[in-house]
Length: 553
Ligand SMILES: Cc1cc2nc3c(=O)[nH]c(=O)nc-3n(C[C@H](O)[C@H](O)[C@H](O)COP(=O)(O)O)c2cc1C
Ligand code: SF4
Image (cartoon, rainbow, N blue to C red):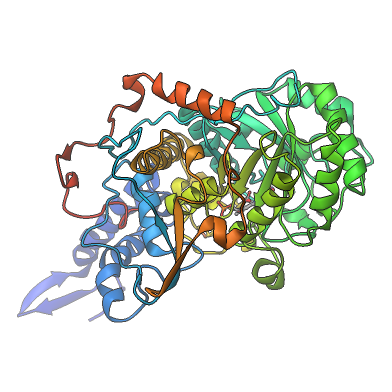
């Protein structure tokens, strides 16, 4: 009966059937789906895995029902819970990011739940904000102002993108983030991998100086001031950040393995192509707080830019010595960026990600206190990172005295990361954390850039709304007395008690407070007008289900 697999003639109910024809329709259908998947630009996962990628969306769709019976609750997934990711995805796509039916946090039995104390009456009151509302939210402090840096400036956004290098992220992911930063008017930190062509899409930069001095090193790998000045002059760099350590791998250097050191990465970093690219664990230009401050002042004097440090928090000896030296008044950092131990990385040994350096709240509060005890807290801009791209975490950071929050992995979620946690393998399925050309090509930077901008705007909007709910005009005006940490239903303590803050700590100076109130009051109605989808008067955005869940890419 058989002539060939495709040419077989069989019989169905006595009627001859041409097997070629039988195969033709499904094969054509699959071909059409594959062609569509390859050509569309909206979903990276479908571009990278045509046809097969649909299974993921289907599994996502039935996920909530499945999980109700078998797998995890909405708050169980880590590092970012399902609810947190849903919020980022929906915000990034300007879709309904509301939640229905009430909280699924266990307020009755859980410990550590954070409660914001709203005020019944206050100076400011919230208007009804919707997804994507363009809330203007500049910093309450002028970066570099107190130390009189030539290019001191007021950051236009309290939410900015955290350092993630070209090398750990793909060129397309960097481009999307930079485009998004330009659109949302926020700063994009380069990470330690220098400034690539993908960083030059219009977004303003904070240039990070890591231990390997990528982008500003000589042939021997030593720091080169002329190269730094050349680089800074070639791009919209607004500030310099000296990286001392990172929450997910403090005190540890890094290696970009030879196969990943492409010509593009080699040119960007100023290293040889195809050779292991090493970041030492310590800086060669300074070896204690005293020589660090000399380096800070050198960079500030030579470039005119504000200069700060990024660090995780462990031993407090460094901070005590640093603040003692700064209290003399002649030298100082313009900003301090504290990275929590819960922060992310491209790759790190388990012991470092899990157990080295304090989580953000504890580490930040301890460092802030060292500055505050010496009367330095109003002169320094405090930045925080460590899951602060989720509104309730960000609110706590502001109440503890942060002036800006940096978002790392949340920005990755906005460009399409699905938390597959394969960043260290180079096989990121969404093209975010990979140098594989095929995988990276799936990530379309223009539309994903819009998502980054939408997400940043929405986070700013939520921060503004929660501040207004507390009767103040700006999150910097929230203090540690505005937030309570619960211990089941039996007890609750305000942040100032939990972290040992004295009265007046956690706020900008009186002059800065007055100025930010003036700025916020002068904000044009246009700038805070609703831009998102229409909403009903009382029920939040139209649409009956939380969007973003089924379609994160
Ligand atoms: C893929 C990846 C690459 C990173 N690269 C850097 C880097 O080059 N320099 C740095 O200081 N931090 C780096 N970080 C840490 C982030 O900047 C940030 O401090 C940390 O992830 C906490 O923020 P998040 O919780 O919002 O992600 C990286 C993080 C990730 C996930
Ligand atoms: S999708 Fe997975 S591998 Fe890619 S960036 Fe996100 S967590 Fe990393």
